[in-house]
Each structure stands twice: as structure tokens, then as C-alpha cells.
Amino acid sequence: MSHATEPHPLSARPGHPLTGVVKPPGDKSISHRAMILGLLSIGETRVEGLLEGDDVLRTAAAARALGATVTREGEGRWRVVGVGLGGLQDPAEVLDFGNAGTGSRLMMGVVGGQPVTATFDGDASLRQRPMRRILDPLLQMGAQVLSEAEGGRVPLTLKGPREAIPIRYALPVASAQIKSAVLFAGLNAPGITTVIERAASRDHTERMLRLFGAEVRVEPSGEGGHGRTIALTGQPTLRGTAVIVPADPSSAAFPLVAALIVPGSDVTLRGVMMNPLRTGLITTLIEMGAEIERLDSREEGGETVADLRVRASRLRGVDVPAERAPAMIDEYPVLAVAAAFAEGTTRMNGLHELRVKESDRLAAVAAGLSANGVAHAIEGDDLIVTGDGAPPAGGGCVATHLDHRIAMAFLVMGMAAQRPVAVDDGAMIATSFPSFRPAMTALGADIVDGVVQA
Ligand code: S3P
Image (cartoon, rainbow, N blue to C red; front, top):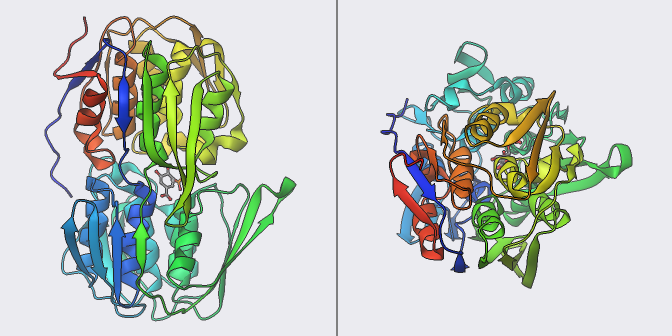
């Protein structure tokens, strides 16, 4: 298990308007997949704009341990020489994924479909997260779990089959991680592996598998066509290619909401990925009255990206439908912060999956709102936040439970609340947005070390 880093308390104080231009870091989902597909391909993959956060660096280290040659050539520029399907080696050491749910689960899909044995572990947060959802389909595909911590958690040792069994798998929850694990395992299956999802989740795996040369068919399915059926033809030859990683909308969410709530702000976010399966937060904020202008839409590396000009706005409460959750699953903590500044009630429906993220995010958000004087309630799986259009009191210190998004969301609150907001530990921000503090400071935010509450 990774050594716990020292907790690093941080506080954000209300201050000047935020102005300027920021380029959020590379998308985390695409960065993990670039490393994994680089490993599974023959030849060279060149990645530009890779997120150099701790989560992705763990995936890079795991790819190396499984046989790839992985080299950093410059800022965000990485070269991966893969081993091809069937060429993986048993890692000599435990694969330590730190805080990274996505990296570990996607790599379980790889190992679960290939003739290799690997042990997965991570930090105290990852050791709490459910892995049964990944292991269940992998067992059907021929993988064996040689050992596991209680309740199907890491540390666990997984042994893949010589050849995976192609399955038809209906996802029990809308999760791109489960979908991706099954598809990665299906790469080594003779035949068609099919995944059926009731609600479409982020489709980066499908897009990138095609980019590397696999055949993937996607059809709408289910009630109202909200779902998808994804069919992968097994045992393709994957060839290394160039991957350009667009800016992560889930990281852009923090400067975006900060610009909306800090009076007088005017911020432009550069090159943000606009994949419709990732833009639920933007849709919701626009419904709330946010002034977000989409400028210069263009194609980059197979995704649409745009610059977003965001101006401080008066927000009003809205109802966020449960069907939208997969397209904004990581954005609820910061949406709850925006809702605290809005006039009226925001109801976020169907948040059960938030309970199994890096922390129990529903509980962590509610505790953070309580600490800062924001009226809210949890009803079943719904979070209800009520504001009066004025800045909330602030002055609280928020427990982050090793969760980067809880830390960033409440620092954003502190930039516009009546009093500063502190977080007990900002160290985990490095997993997804290592430049968060300098980027926000460059826009005019006031973030200081330690706990400042008045
Ligand atoms: C991710 C999928 C989502 C998301 C995570 C990244 C991915 O998780 O929360 O941050 O890259 O596939 P679930 O699949 O559990 O919804």
C-alpha cells in the first residue's frame, strides 16, 4: 500500500474577482486509457497533453510493470511502446494504484483477460472501494481471484485466462469503469464481447479502441434509447498511435464554478472537452442562469473541444434529473457549492453512486455544507441545497476523506463565501489537478496554507 502523504490543510479566502485565461489539465479518463491502450498495442503511442497527476502516473507505472516501455519526453508528452495483446508479463511487484479507482479498475480488466497474474493495492480510500462490480464479469470471462481483502476489495490478486470468454454483460450500474474493464478483457476473447448499458456513460474507451484499430459497434438501446449496446470484436491487432488529450471538463468545473460565484469574475477556460457524455454540469449551470459562452468549437484528437468564457452570474435553484448523473457524476460536489450561492432550491436526484467514490461523497458534501452554514438535506439518494442568492457564511473546516474533489469544491466555496473555508487536507488534489493552486492563484484567488476560518 502507498505511503500516506502528510495531510496538507489549505484555506481559500474571499477576495478579488477572478480574471484571465486558464488551461485545465488533460482529461484523466483519456489519460488512463492512453497508457493502457499503449501497453496493449504493438509499436509506439505518443501522447500529448497527458494529465501528470498521481492517478495517471500510477497507471503509467503499472503499464511499465506489465511490460511496456513508458518514457516522459516533455511536459505532458509521453511515449509508450507496447507489448501487444498476449505479450504482457507478470509484474514483479504489487501494482500500487494509490488513490486511483479508474486506473485500478481498468487495469483489472486488462489483467483479467490476459494470461498474467497481478496484485492490486492502493491507499486507504481505494481499500474501501467496491471491486466486486469489476470482478463479477471478469470471473465470467475466465479470470480467477487468487486472494482478496474482505468484501471484494484491494489488496487482491487476479489471474487472467489464456484466452478470455466472450460474454454479453448488462451493467448493473451506469459505470464507464465496469464497461471499460469488460471491453479491455474482451480484447483477448475469440468472438464478440457485448456490454449493455441502461444509461449511456462516458464513451472514451469505445472511441479510443477504434482509434487503436479495434472494431467496436455501438447502438442505442433500452427505454427511450437512453442506453447503448456496445459490441467489441475480440483479438484485434492494436497498433500504437498518436493521442491528443483534451482538457478535463471535470477539472475545468472548479475554475468554472469559481468564476460564476466570485462577483465581477470573467474567466476563459481553454480547450475544454465537450463530449456530451461529460457536459451535464454545463447544461445544469446554464439552466441555473450561468453565463457560459462556448467559443471556437473545434475537433482535437477525436473529441470536440471549446473555449468557455464564464462570467459571474446570479444563479437560481433547479431540479437536476437522475438521468443526467452519468454525464456529470464527478461534478456534484462543486455543483452543490454553486447551489449554495443560488437563490432557491436545487434538487440533485439519484446520487447513489456518489457513496462509492474516493469518499462517500454524499456524506462528505453534506458535512461540508453543514460546516459552512448552508441549508441542505439528503432524502434517499437525493441531495437538496437551498440558498437565498447571498454568499453562505463559510468559516468551516471541511473533512476531505482523501477525496480531491471534496477538497477543490470547498476551496472554491471559500473564494466567495462570507468567511474563508478550510479543508483538512489538500494533498489529494495532486491526483487529478496538480496545478490547481497556482492556476487559481493566477486568476486572482487567495489560497493559503493551514486552517484559516475568519
Ligand atoms: C470514470 C468513470 C466514472 C468517474 C471516474 C472516471 C472513467 O466512474 O466517476 O472519475 O474514466 O471511466 P464510474 O464508472 O464508477 O461511474
